[in-house]
Length: 264
Image 1 (cartoon, rainbow, N blue to C red):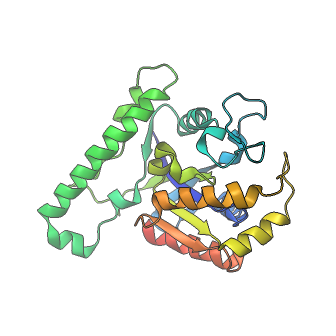
Image 2: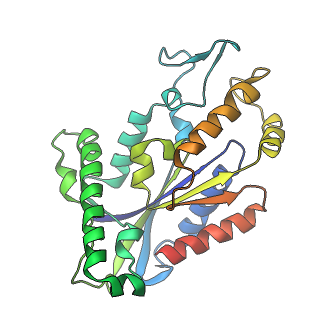
């Protein structure tokens, strides 16, 4: 049975999320079959999926138009084929798998002192995770049997995960609306979002050429307002690390690596 750590990288347009995702992918690939931050974890497979690869074709009738600009709104979930992306994710995870959930496996000394209260909280979290993921695992199961629903990891009260030898796979998910889709958001055990202020984001956007190209006013009337709207949907969540896209990319990369190491 495969064990997967799912890492999500989201962010504002031109914030550097693709650069970060590719840097992590290269780093992990270079460390395959080696110790993965902890002595009992060995890095096995590394797979990356990008949300940008799931944009609907320009002529899709599912697109919404920005009437004032006579231009497709590419900044919303309905511009993406998220069903296909979710199906591809399930194909990567395989027929039988375990999700390595950092928050379920990691227990601090303070947690231990709280005893039964913590166990109850974790059990409630597991029940929620099982119920939520089961719905999606059944929906995207190729044969429609929902047989994957019993293969979610549980926090064990009797077994020490610190001493278990685990071959772990990494799935890197990257996308500008990754945390605005319930399945991709909650599937990720580790989540990072890169933010930029308006002026810096606008300056970087103007240096890029898109296909189809931006029309005049698209950034001001669509890109930025939609980003702010979507960012508000998950801003303040404790399980999402918000990164400053203005700092050097190398610094962001090193910070993210340290975060992953600490969570494991």
